[in-house]
Amino acid sequence: MHPMLKQCDVYAMPASIFHASFKARPFWWEAYAPQALPEVLLPKSARVVVVGAGYAGLSAALELDSLGFDCIVLDANEPGFGASTRNGGMVSGGVNVGKRYMSKPMSAEQSAPFLADAVDAFFLVEELIAREKIDCGWTKSGYFLGAWCKSHFNDMAKKVALLNEAADSGSYLVPQDRQREEIGSDYYRGGMVVARSAHLHPALFFKGLLDICLKRDVQIASKTPVIKLTETTTGWNVETPRGNIAAGDVIIATNGYTGDATPQFKRRVVPVGSYIIATEELAPDLAASLSPKNRAIADTRRVLTYYRMSPDGKRMIFGGRAKFGHTDPVETAPILHRFMTDRFPQLQGAKITHAWTGNVAFTLDELPHMGKFENLHYALGCNGSGIAMMTYLGQQTARKVAGKSNRFCAFDQPEFPSHPLYTGNTWFLPWIGRYFRTRDWIDRQLG
Image 1 (cartoon, helix red, strand yellow):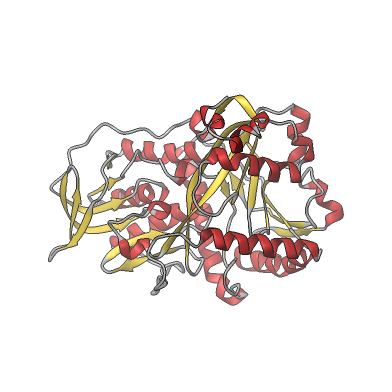
Image 2: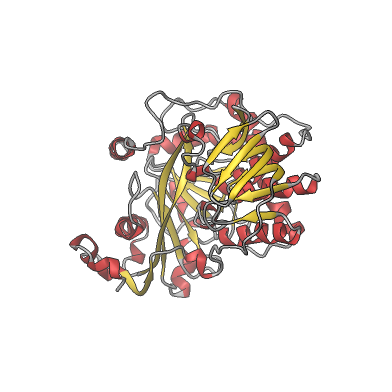
């Protein structure tokens, strides 16, 4: 038994769901775990300093390098330590653009330019994987979104039309009586399929980006947090525990791990913990029945769940907002196991081998953002679409720094909203969680 399961009765009570080999770390790290790179000598100056070595930071660095710009990437931990190697590995092709939990959903006209960029983001990931021969289990098998209630299903007709018109996504409705064609469950009230969607191994995709950077001799300094940024007459002074760097431009690509060095962004990005479990290897027939077409799956609940089979098709990878706030993944594993077995009663006996968490970066207008604020460039706020969106916004930000942007990016908005009562402390998340759970319960009761 994992030692944390012995700490209190909360953990001891559901111990039967944990496999003997249980690990409180990402399943993805079995294939590639983030590791510190050999120490690099920090330069006295660099044309561009990129803060954050995740998808956005590495994508920006690759683009800068291809454009002949000298840059260095700094990360407070090992490159990829955050969400880039912890996420669910789902590339949804824009289905989440315009979806809002706390404010009025975007109209079709408002959503269209963002969807067009989401398409470009999807194809950027696909092109990178093909061109660089990144072995990361890229699988274009589509995405199924389950309707939590009848009203959600009825609303999907407009979403399907918008996705097909603005993003050519190959979307279509799936009525409840045909749901078993998409998922081995009767849990939802029907749903919709987005054909142009994919999933991959997120840690191996990150490793692929990192390997390209290292092959091109892009400088990456791990275990080098930025302590302070001070604007100068020629750019920025970037202060770290290992020395200072004079930078012409700085790109902030810290997403859900944005810290005190950039308080202006910390108060604009809300880090929300997302939790994931992986089951033990399942019987082949059972595994094949859960997602007959190997779709990535999510639902329209406010307390979101998302899931898929592992790249080898042997395990269920199941994630969601088990708690609002930040807590230990071992504590949330039984909650996710219950969510999973609500949808798949046939997995009642499946034990958990891995449980982990990572931060998703939400913004106050629930849209990803790139741009320039107080003379700092930034790519922040994945809002749950990190793989494609952050890779794309990193690239687009680099092109903007280099003066090579030849088109307007919809996510490059003049406004990056903040709120006078939010400075980075997420004390309010449990209250939002209670509100979401109540609304979900009411919606479900109504059908």
